[in-house]
Image (cartoon, rainbow, N blue to C red; front, top):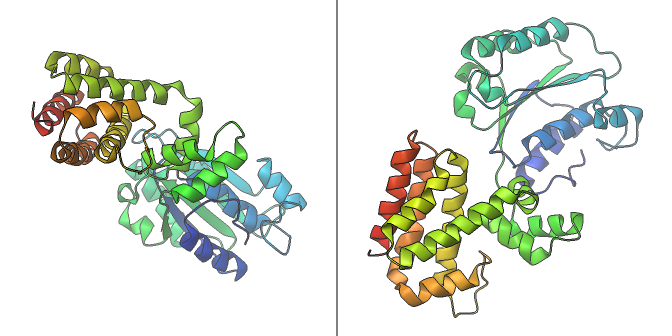
Length: 327
């Protein structure tokens, strides 16, 4: 199997190549990873490899590959739900079950990609479990999930789970800069470090004004922090009132600014792209306080993924940052 177009996660790629090439691919696979790590890309690549008629799979040249690439292959089915809980309805699973016992039209396999499967209701998962217990020999199910913890243990026990991680920043930057002529290697690498190697989020950030807006908010937060303006800091953070994902990104971005401030004046690269803000922080805060602020960002990021009350979280952000800065 050829996976050169999929960046990073080499160990997983090697395992999948071995399974495809040896014709021992499991009938149910769960691909786990946060948004932007390439879950859907990998799922589609596997589906193409499973229907490919070429020697090296996917060859990208045979009729089966071309149909899979154009999303018109009669034996490859893709179901995508919203990410909200219980948005993957049982009716969709019932449609899959009705179709799965019909023989393939052209390929050796019928491949069902169930994207965002962790948003399935319990009843939908139980319905799917019935076909996973005794699937037809030609059927392959590829489930993509943000977290396998949302899936029934009985489904996971009948599947092989692959957990995707962020890519190496240098490798990812080389890929991005080669695909987009207006993005430099240095800019791509810096942004990848901000997103912990998440290549999808990194690419989106170059074309999404929202990320630049959040970066501006973070710079304003840093200035309010050193100016000891508690009210101003609280007003700036109010921009996150209805957007939990923005808080997660802000914590990552702030940590990079604090890190740059900590090493400012040395030969270390500025990974946040905000040397002026880093310089301001370095002149107003001690190294110990900057290190404490970095630790606070990690804590706040964890809280942002769990806390359901944005108002309390914003208050916590302001208090924790000021405390770490000695304000």
